[in-house]
Length: 102
Image 1 (cartoon, rainbow, N blue to C red):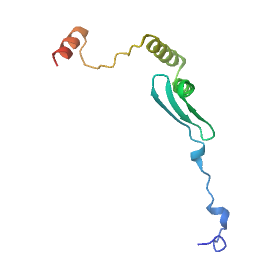
Image 2 (cartoon, rainbow, N blue to C red; image 1 turned 30 degrees about the vertical axis):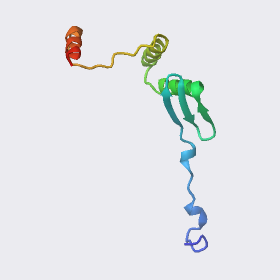
Image 3 (tube, rainbow, N blue to C red; image 1 turned 180 degrees about the vertical axis):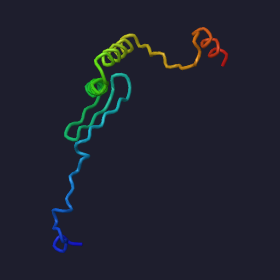
């Protein structure tokens, strides 16, 4: 259908591209990330910092933000990972002995 034969005209078929507004951030590794803001592309450490700030910003509550920021800072400075094992056991020794048997 051509614009002239359209009953409502050409303007009725126009749509705004909202993908240009979308922000895309992805962390690649320690101190490395990529970010695409549509009009600006970031890579490396600066994108990694923007990624961290964006994720902390969207947390609910000041206490949660401070806890996550402190945990991330400690993990970054000490090269340690947080506990990511959920075993269902109350006793840590039981969980360690079960894990070591595998």
